[in-house]
Structures are given as structure tokens and as C-alpha cells.
Image: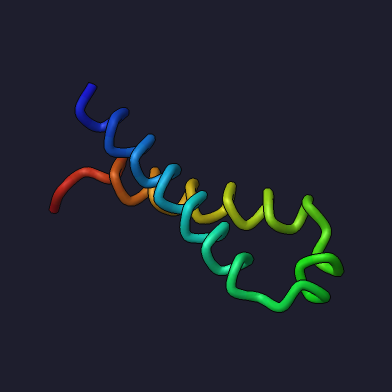
Length: 58
């Protein structure tokens, strides 16, 4: 259960990080970036975070 919560936390952090970066971009760039690219970035960062949490300690 602890790993699941950590993975969800990493996904939420990735979501907020991507939204923060997009918010800092100029309005013309924000309009040019498709929503699918933003969603894809969130999924990739979330998957990397979940993978990091799911790995067993060495």
C-alpha cells in the first residue's frame, strides 16, 4: 500500500511539474503545444516516478 501511495504521489508531482512549466511559457507557445503532448509528458514522468518507487532496494 505504501508503494502505491508513493507512485500516486510521483504521478501527481509529474502532473504539477508539467503544468507549472507550461504555465511559464508565453501564451503563443501554450496555444501551439497540443494537449496530447502535455498529457504524454505527464504520463512519461509519472511512469518514470512509479518505476523508481516500484524497484526493489539493492
